[in-house]
Amino acid sequence: MPRKWFILFVFAFLMLSSFILGVPSGFAASGDKFIIINKENNRLAYYENGQLKREFKVGTGRSQSLTPEGKFKIVNKIVNRPYYTGHIPGGDPRNPLGNRWLGLNARGTWGTTYAIHGNNNPGSIGGYVSSGCIRMYDNEVEWLFNQVSINTPVIITSSGKSFNSIAIAYGLRVTGGPGTPAVPVAGGGEILKRGSRGPAVQELQRKLTSLGYNTKGIDGIFGLNTDIAVRNFQKARKLSIDGIVGTATKKALGIK
Image (cartoon, rainbow, N blue to C red):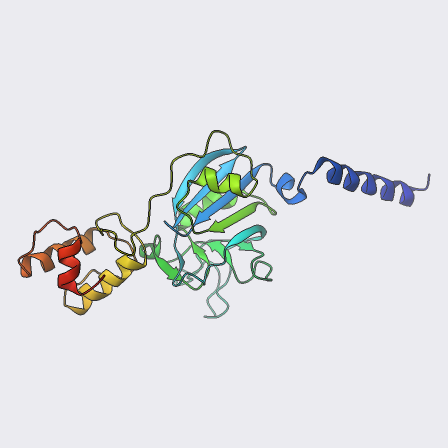
């Protein structure tokens, strides 16, 4: 058999086998590794062989629509990607893209617009801060970069479910049951306190800052500085000084 026809035969056989066995080529190529990003609590989970290996805090879009949701894959990996918009070379401390770039094929793009990447502002990690990308600490995205390959699946969603439940819903194999639900994001009529995250916390921070109680950032994370600002506000308004933004404190602030 001529070499050309032999190669075509082997290729056709492999494609047919993949179809019959129902093995998704992108997932198989990743070696049973995948990533889940939950915008509800701004956490990233890294899975290997069906097991949750590591979990990281991330930063996502300033508004709900900026960071795309769905099932994507990593299509390129770049070390020290230049920040072309600002004409900043890769590796420069001013570069807001950090030291690693994992490009995603989201919204018709091919790894040039949306990515998981580092950042030169560690204080932004964990908040709703980006124009659509997923930000990580430089040392953590460097670790992740070394674990994954091209075609690794990436799920981005907003969910109150556990990472295992999200993976199962997308047809990915996990070891064990659904797992523990995600930490809920503060919103609506929920009580806000240290550890709360989300748009409601951002609204709280804006209100406190406008009243002269500096939260040292409007990142949607109820941390130490927001706690201090809340307590100072409560003290000034002769409220219970507990750092918890419940009905009475919300009413005094004029927020829902």
